[in-house]
Amino acid sequence: MAPQKREGVTVQSVARALEILECFNDAAELGISEIAERMDLSKSTIYGLVNTLTSFGYLEQGENKKYRLGIKLFELGNVVQARMDVRQEARPWCQLLADKYRTTVHLAAYSEGDIIYIDKVDNTNAVVVYSRIGKRAPMYCTGVGKALLAYLPESYVEKYIYSRPMKPMTEHTIITREALEAELRKIREKGYAVDDEEIEPGLHCIAAPIFDHRHKPVMALSVSFPYGRLWDVDWEEATRDVLYYARQISERLGCVA
Image 1 (cartoon, rainbow, N blue to C red):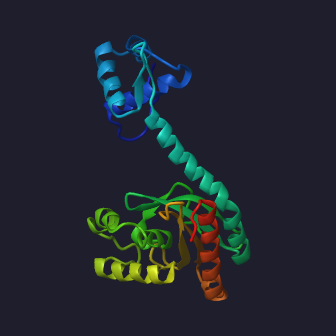
Image 2 (image 1 turned 90 degrees about the vertical axis):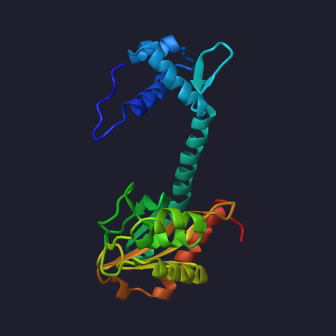
Image 3 (image 1 turned 90 degrees about the horizontal axis):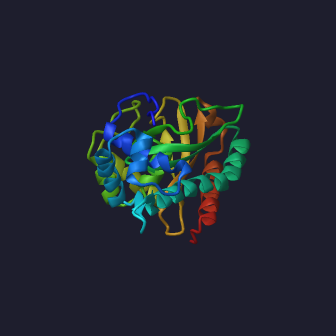
């Protein structure tokens, strides 16, 4: 099986391991010889890769000595599915916010110190061009990121935020540990975060965390006011709405106050 040409730097052994998993798209079980034939590689090479995948739970060996996809892939698939479910659950609330304030609403998850925009609802009256679905941004300089950091374990903040430089994105970006710690305390007191031109000049937003059934912060919701729109908005009302809708989504995820 010829590997698909991909852009960017790739690690051959990792690429081959992933290609082995793809061999099972049309086969429930495969032996070493069958995989080697599909991959056009030696059985010794395939054995090492298959053994590694098996040891990490991505493949399983049956009683007939053949291999099948492992439970680890099922677990990871459920993680992805859960995120997609949240997106569907949250979309009506995001739409209501976007329509009411005639602006952009974001839904974001997080990974290793970054937020990832997983949904974006625009309004024709005000479109935030900085963000797009799938884009990453530092947690320390975004409203959604700070809303999550305030409720994540200190060990997470230490590992992914304080262990590396906080680069200024604008002149308003928080770039010191002391300032960020003070900001996170304020967020915990109020329940929401704000972004005052910290990721992009002229962009303001209000964000609140979304919790799952374990009361763990899993995502955040934000409403953005770009380029002067802030002054046309009742800030207190907008804050109440963001908090309310974030709670509604949290309740849909099983979070009971």
